[in-house]
Image 1 (cartoon, rainbow, N blue to C red):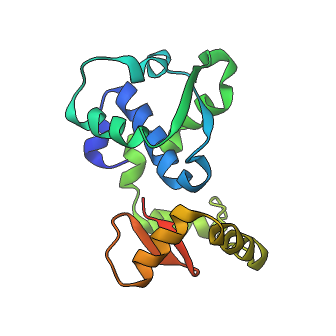
Image 2 (cartoon, rainbow, N blue to C red):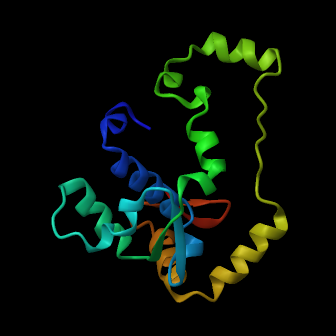
Length: 163
């Protein structure tokens, strides 16, 4: 999260995380209903509130593209997310870690990372699926003709939404 986002109320931080996930996974979530499980009860009613601030109003406009169902899960039964959010490595001051500390941790094998690239079969399958999707074809034609399309770029020969 950006420094300013750390000052958002918890409810808005939760919604910000949901919006980020929707942007990343939009290719899979557009045009079909899905469930967002959250341990923040207030998120369940977020689509029905009458007044809000500008930031949340912008998110509402983005949410309108999707068909989310918000479902509350009690915190006791949502232990995985609690473990991640309460992990001291992920606290706000974690953003202030020095590069030298990261390098030293990597040398000591305290950090495990992996970079995965889509396999050729996944990319080929995506290209086949995209070739039959009218909306993707329109988007692809715009990008191919050099027209600036907000939030989209080409990666691995496929249209890709920027987050």
